Length: 128
Image (tube, rainbow, N blue to C red; front, side):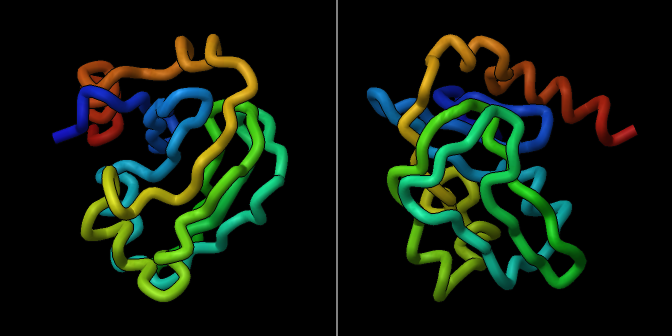
C-alpha cells in the first residue's frame, strides 16, 4: 500500500529523493483522515524551511491540517495543478498529488524517517 521507495514521517508526510531534491506529499492515511480535500495552500518557491516546520496547509471539508517538512531545505517547485484541482491529493496521494519539491539541505536527515514497513507498523499503533 505504501511505496517502498519513499520515506515517511510521524506527521504523515512522505518524501521521494530525486538527486539533491526531495518531492513531498501527504500519505494515503493522512488524506483519508482529512476526507475530501478542497484547498491546498502552497508556499512560494525560494522559501527556506527547517525540519518539522509548517510548509503548507491542506483544507478539507472536515478540517484544516498543517503539512510539515520532515527535512530542512528550500522550496524549488510547487504542484500548481493543486490550485485548480486539490482533490488530486485524494485520488493519487503518493503520485500526482505531490505538494512541493525541496532542495534538501542535509541528506543525513533522511535517516530519521521511516521506510514503508516501519510506517505501516507505526500506523497500526495509531489506529488503536
